[in-house]
Image 1 (cartoon, rainbow, N blue to C red):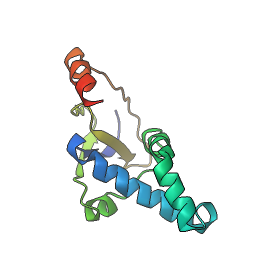
Image 2 (cartoon, rainbow, N blue to C red; image 1 turned 60 degrees about the vertical axis):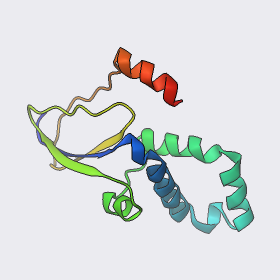
Image 3 (cartoon, rainbow, N blue to C red; image 1 turned 60 degrees about the horizontal axis):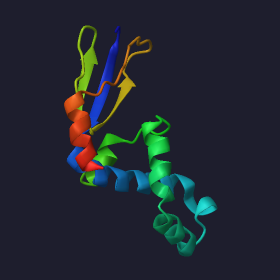
Image 4 (cartoon, rainbow, N blue to C red; image 1 turned 90 degrees about the horizontal axis):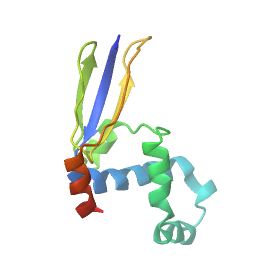
Amino acid sequence: MAGRIRWFVVPRRHLPKLHAALLDLVFDAAGDKCFPTAEIKARFLTGGGWRQLLHLLFYGKRIFPDPERLRQAGVEVIAFDLCAGQCLIANGGCAHWGVNQNDETISLSTNALSESWLKVRRYLA
């Protein structure tokens, strides 16, 4: 890697708060055009489709939330910079994203699952 990337990590125990804050961001961005009435908004929430929407937008790297807004919503957000020669190892199940801090940054990213994490994950689903 060349350059510097600011990484943000949200621990697994804060994922419900993260998802609630992301949902607020989606509603703010969509505004009255997508949710013109409280009834339509309520139907969207009770239908369960919001979970798929959040996963698509956030985990598909389509939205990058402001860490300060997340913190104001009670979400624990850990921030740090990663430079050349350094590596990020995060606990399975956490949310994480990085933002380039230089004009040019070259990096390689991969996610790997250990066998022990897969066993634990079965009990969390």
